[in-house]
Length: 397
Image (cartoon, rainbow, N blue to C red; front, side):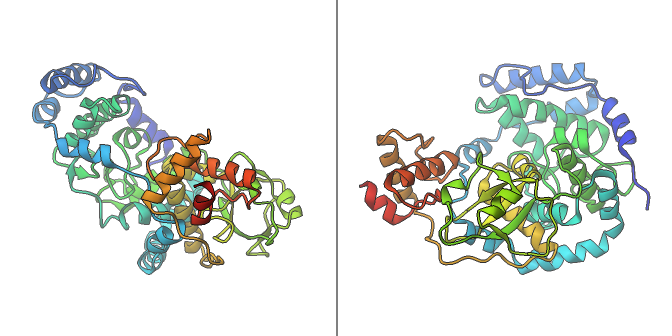
């Protein structure tokens, strides 16, 4: 099988003028028809055909349900163990390995061109759509038009709305293409601008179709992951074992160190036979505190955070990739479960009253709340693992 290489993709990209990056072409809100008129004017400047404009701008509809979904979206409320146990299931593990065999040549090409292992691509493929089975049924153009018109993130979605028109003009998606409510398209759920820039015609049929064509989805994902900074041949996440008397406050982003220094502190790779450069910098992650699983995250883990900034999602996706590569399920002791929303809000309010920055008081264990928990644990002389428990809540009351 032959594939279109980077140089060919570049020609495809250059055939369309550059669109806005993080900027808007008109003010948000106001009159939707006026917004569509300004979108049409900008699309004309970029060379979008009159036929495409007539069938996109001329027929785009504002969908208030999209705005409601955008306002209601919340971070994961499940603990890491609960979420990852659901996400890393037999269906994904079995079918992921079947995909390795079915698309072996494509995955070989992904490694040769972009240095991205099949396990990494396949884990995202599974997490996003269960290998294309669940791609979303929202009209993509209407979703993007609604979000582009809305005033919460117009700098993100106005360029995406225009990019969707360009994809239609190029023949890669259709007027009635459907996807996720926020405009992501296809088996690996990508926004139009990323498809324009990184899309690969994997089966060489003259069209980049992330919805219908696994070959396109695999190589496009590999191209994007490479662009995000993937370093070929280096690790992304490794499970580790920690001593009971470990310095828990050393865990978390911003406190990384070389692998050899972690080993000097008693950190052991669970898979002891692994040969990893001990000078590689890594960060200790405790997604459910000192009694939960423990991982060292290496530089390639930053790609996961670029793909999705949810801590629970990224550690789960990275561990799923390791499971697909043959690793065993993580081990843990018996960690406390995550606080319910009401208790988490109470905890956040108590921390805030003591001067700690928890971010928005919303009942979600985000990065700032974890950091505030770590600091109060240090103040109380507790194991500073950044994991809030009911015992900690009672101490604060």
